[in-house]
Length: 121
Image 1: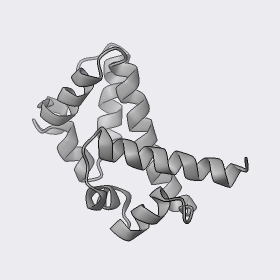
Image 2: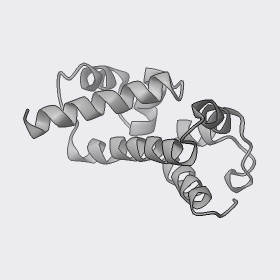
Image 3: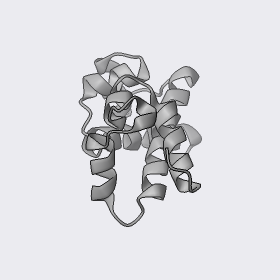
């Protein structure tokens, strides 16, 4: 298997994770990544590969997945509740999902990494 084929598979997996686990619509995923819904479908269906600029943004979604699975390893439902309903002071009292929808993945990732390292944000 070639590297480009592996990369396409990773892209498809992170898009489907964002859709199925985070509950983002494909238009919302497009907004987070900064592209069009049509492009998201083409990436998901492995018709084309994202450019390096978009790989970086998709990698951030993959990093979010990593941290959610790391912080909540035994209870995916707890992770779901944290993302969808947790009011986080460091996010101005908003839910992580509201920040994710606005493309503010970095701050959510920082908070998860802090939790993992024993800090409470």
